[in-house]
Length: 176
Image 1 (cartoon, rainbow, N blue to C red):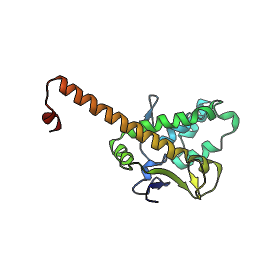
Image 2: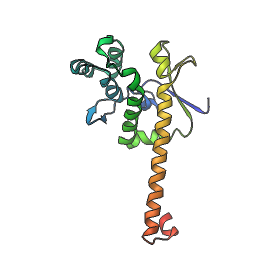
Image 3: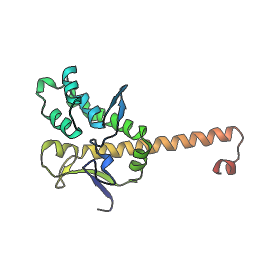
Image 4: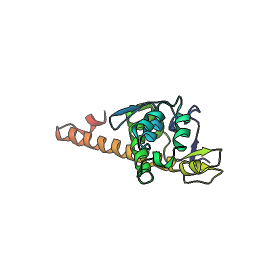
């Protein structure tokens, strides 16, 4: 589709960096994580030792697999209520802390972003789509973050122009 961008594997060009498994550090809640997947899954664990075990996974994909297999008693009791908000905050960090990633996200214009998985399971249908079916939560959150970043940049430009005008600059000088 011309008005849609799909992604899945972190190493696929050009949109692999939209994946949470893309290897780029993210500082979230004062802690640096290897990937946005690490930052997300760190919030899932009820106990610190379970969190540390998850963070020690050798790859982001294995981290995700391990986190999806946690026993119910190892998962934070509020996880189902907080996970989407956490993911959005992490995505904001990821795409504001790395200029190149921000440019990639903004460069998607107004296209629908969709994580396309091949394995049909509940997790893939929640965060993405499989065979056109799923909630595509990651894609939806990425589109929300894209719009928020756009709005922030627009607001900053307006504030900059207003400040320049207050200092007596002309419109021609501001445009230059």
